[in-house]
Amino acid sequence: MLALILPDCAPDPRAPNPMLQQQILDILQAPAPTLAGFVAGPNASALEAVRALQPGTLLYVWGGPGSGRSHLLQARANLSEPGQPAGLFVPAAQAGQRLPALADVDTPLPAVLIAIDDVQHLGAAAQSALFGLINRWRTAMGTPGAFSLLCAGDCAPRMLALREDLRTRLAWGQVIRLQPLSDQDRALALQDQAAARGVPLGPELLQWILTHHDRDMGRLMALMDALDRYSLARHRAITLPLLKELLAHSAPRP
Image 1 (tube, helix red, strand yellow):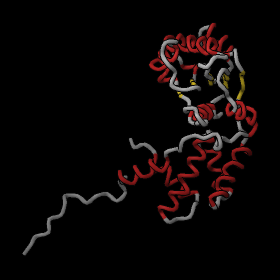
Image 2 (cartoon, rainbow, N blue to C red):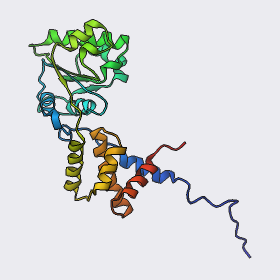
Image 3 (tube, rainbow, N blue to C red):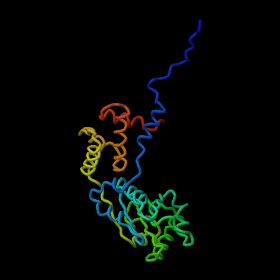
Image 4 (spheres, rainbow, N blue to C red):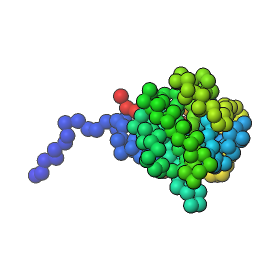
């Protein structure tokens, strides 16, 4: 007679499923930012200025958290024009390593557009390199080697806690402030995306998202996309409990 050997303890059905949690994290992965996916609201002129950047121009955009400045920079850097390579996006965390080579006039530039994000976080070495890069940009203006610079920060150039000569140079080109989106703008954008997908978005669910989740529209759009896919994967209607379940599964475990 065969003996049935049972484990010392049965698995807890309430324990988190690592495979499911990874699937949820994959679902929540935000898609690459695009200019078409930028919710302009009162920032239509800023969007057009970013889209129309040509070699030899310098543009500085600024705004508070969730204003979409990083979205704009990444989207423009990813935009390939016929016969031109895509731009280069440099976040502040990588600026110290990447900007010195870009500032070196003897090193060919890898792109005709360089986008540097969160300049307010640049350390001393990165500030020096950006100073040199802006000087290189000005020298190359009007030549076959001309390129465009797109920089972003959380305040106007004169208010940045950077070296004075760098603050002055960041204001050499056009400076545009990104205005915050109103709750109405954000609600309309979410409703438009939901309608395009044929997803019912009830007022209770919409209000909860707007009051409890990130104000950044890129992440809000990614959440809507994730919720749509999650509801299909779970064969359940989109409701507030389903959204809370999605967020609970995606939350980091202690």
